[in-house]
Length: 135
Image (tube, rainbow, N blue to C red; front, side, top):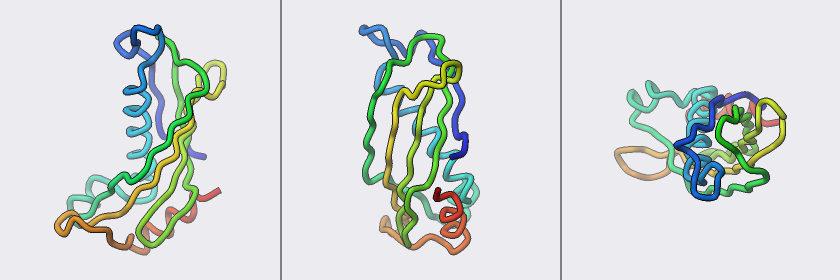
């Protein structure tokens, strides 16, 4: 797994239950996603120069422990499956200090042609980079 996010739980992330609200888990997992994509070659430059992008198809989050104000978070990620047009990957969010797992997020994304708004194959280089991150 590779580190794809490091950050803090700020007081503004806390809801009336006293822990980080689910919207912030999704936001932090989304940031981790773009770091993972960048690691395999799906960068901002790639998107702009090729008129290609990614669309989320499915996202499952399992909340295991509360994230509290002041907690320092780390997300590690890995590719689970790489297909011609899709990628399935996993994020694991943990408390950096205690190393306890706080949440797990599994996502399925599809590579799309931004002009046609349809799925399309990954270029060979991105496909191969994704396969290298499968563990």
